[in-house]
Length: 288
Image (cartoon, rainbow, N blue to C red; front, side):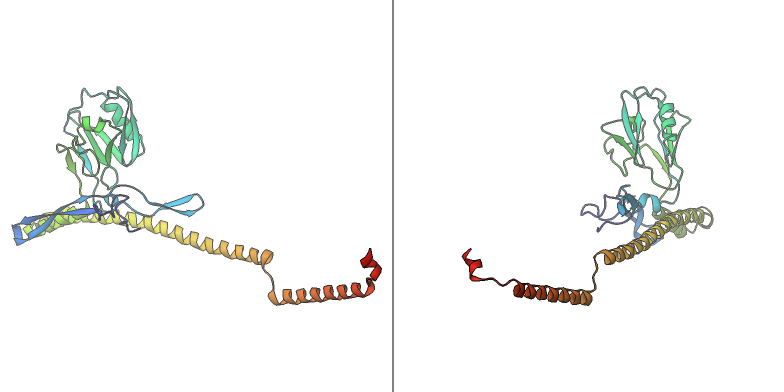
């Protein structure tokens, strides 16, 4: 299709050709010059499904903000939500799943709804009655207010000027967690500074976490590949059976069929000849 397999539906276009955007900055430390200082995910979390059997679908892509994430992400709102209550019935979307927020729902009710939605995200109340959200598996948390709603904006998580994901968090939100690319950038900077303690401790630990996440997704892709191989073998088996059935019901032996046809044609001609000799027309037959 021409789309990157790690970008959901949004990438592969002229405006957004690749899932990640590299951010460069001139660094003087270590005479690095123009060096990559960060990345931004520009894809989305869409799944491209392909039908592999009747009524059975497999997704053939993995969003980059899942497979290339090194750690769990923690989003800490810095807004006091002590007196917050939703004014109307609204919808929020977290990691692609919509949650209904009813009029009058306060922070405790909203946290309970998030934690019981079956998401890989856990919500807790902070010490300042603020909302904290943490992923339970390494990935970038995807947040949206749906249909003009303001729940996540009012709770201080989403940017009111740019509410559409990705990279739509409010500037006041404290973000912990990083992608694999950011982790490698951090490792590079620590190596340049010669900070052996951070390199041997924190950075290698994060590298192990990143590799574990990649291996987890690799296992998932391997399971899908095995499923596709199994379906391909079953399709070949079904094809052989169908062709055999068609051969029995519709197939013919050409030489034998031609010989039988010629024999029947000879019998037919012989019968016509016998009939012509047996029933000879007379002049009276024509006069009648």
